[in-house]
Image (cartoon, rainbow, N blue to C red; front, side):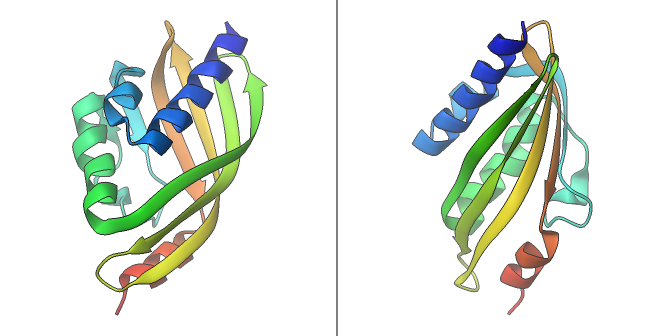
Length: 133
């Protein structure tokens, strides 16, 4: 099952990169808990619960507030039911025109072939600075 989980995570990143958010949402368990990093600009409603909570609370905000927001995963670590990925975020905050290029680590936990929990770690300071005038 663990290779399947790594492939699912790779597929989610690829779908996000294509702008195919429905494909990402389709990988989420109905009871998914999505945790943004503490002090991150979108941690205000942690945890986001359920696919609609993730869609509205995270993905829609990213699409509305950022130009060219990208998630580039560079390495995947297979932990069975949990997959870790590390890489970089990049993009420009529309309101301030400030750019970020921030490292991240993501942890994906699966149950019954669907993502049941997501935990993000990133450079929250870069994002906080980007949204300030």
